[in-house]
Image 1: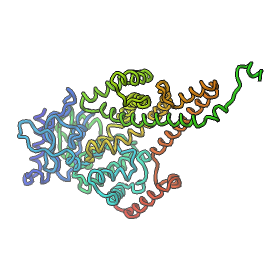
Image 2 (image 1 turned 135 degrees about the horizontal axis):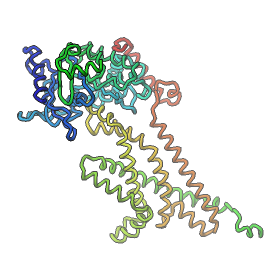
Image 3 (image 1 turned 90 degrees about the horizontal axis):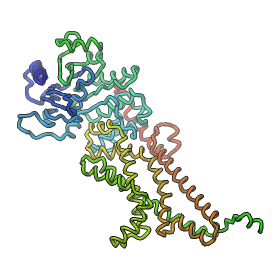
Image 4 (image 1 turned 180 degrees about the vertical axis):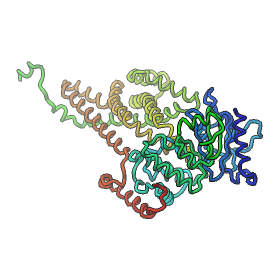
Length: 274
Length: 263
């Protein structure tokens, strides 16, 4: 199965024009042979994935297929047992077996370049909306309060919540909270944004506003990796669509995957959810 | 007079009102013991809680053993053991009766408080840590800016209960001859035979002390609660919030609306 996933990765490489082969030129993220176990449960079985700059990757598949774990591996919230994560040409993680040990990047450096939006929002409840967005600028980037607040306010304005800067997360709707969470990530100027089922915890009527923000973000050319059950949305923004099942990438491809896929497992999943 | 004596006794609170200075001295020592022990126990308790949560198994086991041991010993037994046992056996002249008492309280209360703080830290959802890490914070920064403030808020009510317990338990050192509130009362009663009046006053004083702490804890809970600084009510409430309000308003005007990517 690992071989299959690796083949998927090479397919990616060949599908894109070879002129950009210099590593790190157009590649924003590359996962290489990721092996992840939770105890004896083999959740990621040698998965590889390549995300080009400006590309929108949609990952879908049944529960427990490893798609969230895959996403969380990109910023090393999940540390794989082996394999490596390459972001903007820099290699992180334990490495691929058999390769010489290169110098690994510090995972905090990695995380500064990768924004993440969680299913449960995970806003800091003891901080105001404004402070939620400024805290990383001030504590991680060491920015002065005035400048940090100005940047944060601009970002909150982008997601339509400038009027809520003095509120606390508990006073906001789920959709508003998720938009603040998006602003909190965006303010750090990430190279890549990861979305881990960003609308799954929302009331149906609030899903739209979050998707609208994500859609406009996609239009700005942000590199995005989105794990979602919103197949309609995935179909709309997904340049590269990845179907995972049981710890491997079963199939990946362009938009045609939703209507014309090769694998029977992909077909039955899409038929079940669409 | 005769009739009163036949009933057994008559109330005479002058024994209390004439000795208010004695009571006051007793209250001061009681509060000194309680507050000193509690502050030390809180500091030690934080250390115990962090040790308990350490990724190092040995450190965790040491903390667990500490908690288990000192929660098991009755407080009075421990006080007597420290003062009459440990002090004499090892010739620790440092342990005056007062210090022995404070030491015993600190050790025992740090075990209880350590468990409260551990639970408080663990009650902060794991997603909070992940969110902080994901924006590039380190482990220590994540703990101090994100996890700890939330853990403190969770820990305030049970910690307040412990402080009330501490004030009451401080009376146990009367057995070592420390002139705190209970021993003062005891001496006064023995001298005047006015047991009811003197002890009733002491009961009243403990009631006042614990009630005051109760309101202090309630105040702290409210202080740590959240409120919208842009709301009318908060602004009326505090001049500090008014300043913050002005800041935010200025910020909103500086940014203005316009570049929204929202619907």
